Length: 274
Image (cartoon, rainbow, N blue to C red; front, side, top):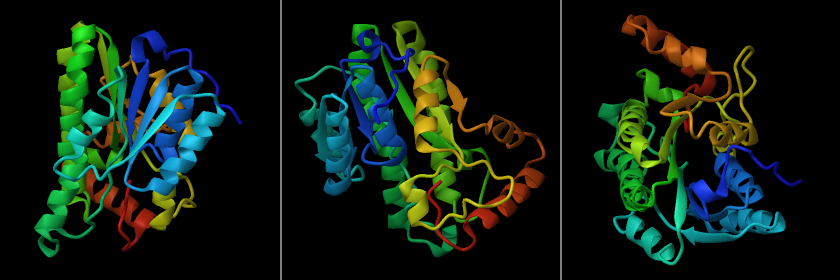
């Protein structure tokens, strides 16, 4: 089924090409479908060739232009490879949807190299890609940047010491970038996700059936993100704005303990990619 065009996505402002990191499945693939429907070509970045190929075929079936690059975004040369693969096109939109809790462990029991790799994915790579593509957008006086975040970045959580910290960092980075680029015609949005029914979340066995828990669908999240690109610096998806606001209160002990109890219901003892 073809994706519905989003009237908020102007291909002259955000095109003619978009780069989507983490674009092979879930929310990233839905971003790609929505942009293709708007007439914007997409460059999909992910580690695995198979899912990239499947999503590329879906986009072509929608009549969209698509390129793929299988790249490990934690590698030291990742940003250089992406820059080389897009050197001949004009990128008007960057969506950084990659990022996961790839080393779920209590901090003192974890491996520092594992935590460093996670930070490379969640912090170093998005900064490098924003620095590269953002300069071109600023020079042209138009463009957009979406950095996908998580409710996990709003309060501390066991086994998320580094992951949650990286998501909190990305939110402050996005807010600051929004201030710096808003007068240059470049929109910046930190798109905050709650529990979303993505393949990655399903693979780690998250419990989507907890009574009263809000669970968003990838297509809805992507649609909300594109619709609110110009409404930065932060938009919370899936009806989770109230949860984000509660998690920003003053009684940090109560907030963190309450969040911890909810997280245990969601993931138990398993690793989480929220």
